[in-house]
Image (cartoon, rainbow, N blue to C red; front, side, top):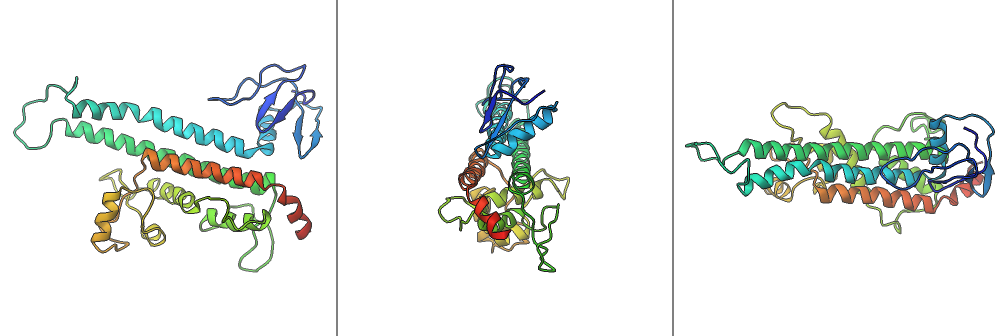
Length: 297
């Protein structure tokens, strides 16, 4: 595939004379064209060589990673909405005694009929939410890593020696706060005008870490750990009644009543919107990168 007469801008590929199909908004990438030229920073980059599909997509990502992050967040919302439908339908049918839950078996105990089926559906909804938070955390990590190594190009300072030697790995601790600090200098911003809730973005990563490293076989529920509750005593990913019960019990971080990680449609979608807002804000200040490079030499 030669990169020649065509144009790609902000993630949308327009075919030239030698190309036909294009990469556009939608549920997936369209058929790749035969020839393209990529435009970046008001300059044209033309490569007369055969390139793989991966190289083509990498070229697009370098131009507008905000677009590709949004593609992921859009899919995460789609995946959640479609995946929970069957579980919600089961709960609805049980609650309204609709077939096949309209003829409960004889029982002398006091628990509602089909309780196990209802709880399994609730667990299914929780697992879908946990999976989506993991996908969002992964998308954020890839986004920041791409900014660091491909789009801008900056090292993290060696905090022990105080030098500016580069490291290939994501820094220890909260990678969200680390990238926030470095990007504030590069993009010349204090983030106050951005309207971005970094607390929500960081809790995405914390919730992912908690739910993907379970500690008991008794339940799929994973309680917020002391570190999270210490930093966020009113966590985003928790039910109001659990948070209230925990606070009324003394709000001890290691309490048995510590709220579980609970991802609802509203909190998940709000988190994806914060991720999109972050990417759009950074994209709008990329003109500051050149000045930063001149300052740092």
